[in-house]
Image (cartoon, rainbow, N blue to C red):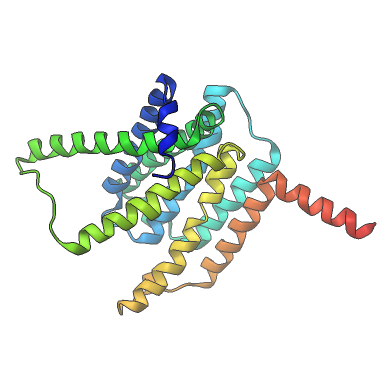
Length: 259
């Protein structure tokens, strides 16, 4: 409703770009769902958020763009932070589900790179609406294929709680998230974007603990350890090192203080 007037500016490039972004997003969601079963929330969040590792690889292959030393250092520090949050329990990574999550990482890395590239050349609001439209179409087609293979009937749930969750996720998470990300990525590099998004691990860590207490799930999985706190601090430090605007702001502040 907010961007309705923008629809009259749609052209062929917007349609193609929206379709590409939607396909990448669908692949991410599909393999995320495939890999999320039988894994705890923190492990899933840590593995999925590490997709920033694949962004330099894709940029090197497609654009011959190599990360500068500060970016490499920031990637290493953030990765160490992720390992701390996982309490260095690497045995959780020896699981076939992790393979699906890695494919999801590659899809998300391609999605972030494509979003930044398209958003700087096209109308971000049209791209955001186009993604939501095409992802709905692609998901419906996939649902029909799944129902055909499994021999089940296509029917919508009738529980009010289900539709409340759908509305909340579609509007406040997917809708606003897509619009804000598409606009913001005109000014932020794909690697910085992905590393900033990786801080969702910290949010997952905090919210998992709060939600578990609310539902009375007092298990070791939801306890915030010292390693997790160290990891969260390392992640923030790594992101600040990798963001040149942060470093420039620090230098300007230091220079003004000396003056």
